Amino acid sequence: MNSRHLLLLIILFTGGPLAAGCGGAKPDVAERSPALYQPTPEATPAKAASAEAPKIADVEAAVQRVFKDKAVIDPDFTPSFLVGDFNGDTSQDLAVILKPVPEKIAELNERPLWLLRDPRVPYDPRTPLHVEKDDVLLAVIHGYGANDWRDPEATQTFLLKNVVGADMRVQDGKEFVKNNTGPRKPRPQGDLIGEKLKGSEGYLYYTAANYSWYDPKTFKGETEVPGPFHGGARRTQ
Image (cartoon, helix red, strand yellow):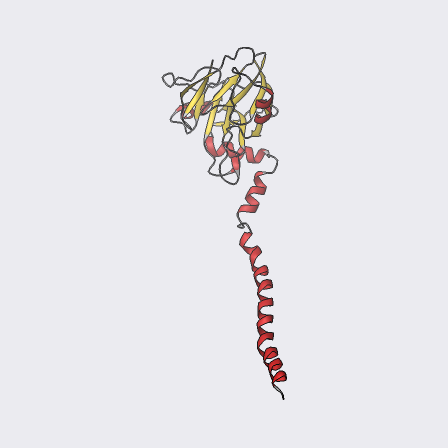
């Protein structure tokens, strides 16, 4: 065997396995890489559930989670609840019309876990509000976590007096801001609730830390006042 043939044999026996090994490395990486980007088993169904259309059983469960047996959904209104991102944190919130359970009025007013407000009057912590037995209330349960307002940890709630009207509907916040400009327009953080209240068309909306009422005919602007959530709130004039 001459030196040329010997050189060819050396190349075949030493270079072949190396080339095969290099070629096989890429498929091995390609097979493992998708697993690195798969969501956790808990994340996918949770988000899918939050995107489902609201069911009355879910709404009842949310009311029970926050209020226990102190308030129930008011059957005299259709619809009795709305879903939107009312406080602008990208999580879906639940607005539901409630009536107090008469036997539980005292408990409803005693150290509540929610914030009782009347969006149609300036908030004054020196003048506390109380729930009365004939009140029609709007509870806004802010969403939390992967399941938004359905989440077991979603308990931050505003309980609103004197703002339940007719033809209640969700108004997209971005669309509202786009179509309403000027110095005397509200600055909603998220979606609004449009309705006809006491003969006037207006909107319920979340400011920096509270819910306020906007009547286009009487609104004069907003000023900052202290609030319980996210710094200051804006007072409607």
